Length: 115
Picture 1: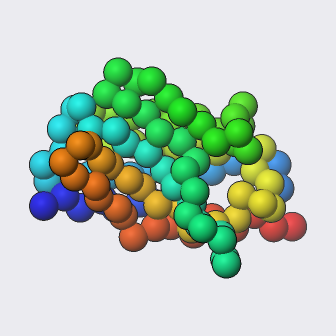
Picture 2: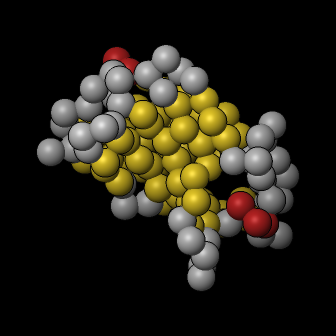
């Protein structure tokens, strides 16, 4: 079984930065895709960014140039550096790890961007 625990969320003002971390325990394999999703109130969950085992990254258009995803296979961790935050980035951010055979989610961490 895999457990994902997110941390690093909080309340920030527009233009500020946050770094989210996700620590994974259990049967995580280096070829799993790791990523971050978010869900704002009354909206569907959406992909924010993902990173493959070969460190190929994919970003939502709304965060390109502002967010950076990275992974540490040795420590089974994935990170999301978020810069120039906007009020529309406010959401619960979820860590995800998946492969052809599995799909795991963390419980989420709240990010609120407000003045």
